[in-house]
Length: 257
Ligand code: ADP
Ligand code: MG
Image 1 (cartoon, rainbow, N blue to C red):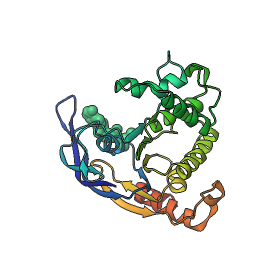
Image 2 (image 1 turned 90 degrees about the horizontal axis):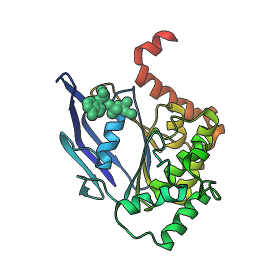
Image 3 (image 1 turned 135 degrees about the vertical axis):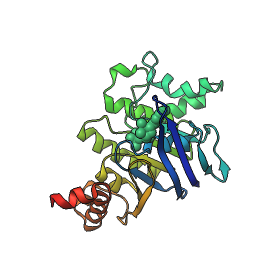
């Protein structure tokens, strides 16, 4: 479904130096698979997601979705950023319809019905005519996820979508994502800095190394579905989480034990 071939992106820093953000990433993600990207801060997770989204040109290599090279944003790809990025003056429903307006598509009754259906799905039924400031951070992020789902994209890219939320809302949102995934299966690439979130949600976890970001190891998560929070005490869960921690912290962790 998504194929990364030798994906490389360099930047020029302000002082003119070369920043090798990510290098030679090869990765295949299957249809309806949920893959998490984890790794130290600055290892290129957001860059990689933006490359898959077609928001950023590659230095080298290729990204393909359904066999087609990605060179620009695709209508069948939805993106969710760390902060909800809603238009503050527009109602929640209008925020969901905004991408359509951007594409100069007609805002049909069917589109409005779709917006309402999605909002109901994530527990925001009745909030359609509110503006973002009337909603909590978690509710705003749910609305931003709905906006990304408006076209019913086959690919969903999520960059630390729950990162700014408090721990309880975060857990609630994780369950919401698992439920959404059951009801509308999608291919999802999920960036997180939470190891337990990555293990709980994913089919596979890709651990990236520090700059330049490369694939260090890919860890399959053998836990059964439906996933539940109680699974954190499960042996398979602990095993995956420990392996990821060891890869990220390496000798520093070993020294602390
Ligand atoms: P992560 O999301 O894993 O924290 P990023 O993908 O945001 O990492 O950044 C990876 C590296 O690339 C960092 O060193 C960052 O400073 C650099 N970088 C990202 N975007 C730019 C840019 N537009 N210009 C220069 N450097 C950038
Ligand atoms: Mg980032």
